[in-house]
Image (cartoon, rainbow, N blue to C red; front, side, top):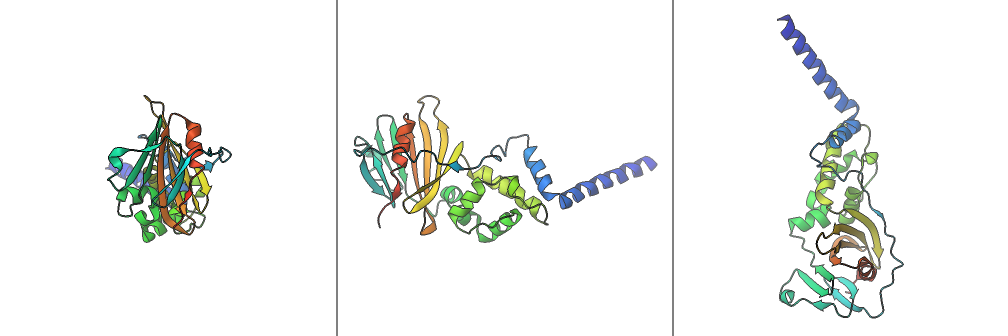
Length: 249
């Protein structure tokens, strides 16, 4: 009986110690849980957006302007609209040798689009209030601001005290892993819009560079626009991206 009692007391002390650690050091415990994950569920925790460094790449004068779904781009003259998408809504694809440009229609009703491009709408105002309660800085309540907060979230942003800090910090880390599929991302700004340029990798077989350009209207930071670009010529992608702006309404 003494042995059972000693074991019980030891377990009780350990449990109380763990609970005490969660209460006294919620930020550290959340960071420990995430960083010790053996399945790699939080592989992007240290990533942040960087400043876009290719604004100086000029778009050739020969490129032709194309405007769809509220966004305007200039594309190479030989980039032709793909036949099979001409009767479909939701996207428009232009192709030339080694280049594909896919202009997407914003779809507020799509859960996938909401999660990636409309995180504030997807998470919801009340849920975001709880999730962001662990942050030691205020976040504006719109899709662009929340997307930026999630993309740049690290434990450096987490408050050291507070009842819900541990839960909120782990939840934010989970959001980041779920929403941020890219390998690297840059902050991007153009006429009338701010957003991100995401690099999604290089194709193993075709050696294409894959990028997503996500823009939010400065007049309504809940309003998003997406262009997906892949090319064997990375410089060509910068030339197209640098021509992006909101289309006149």
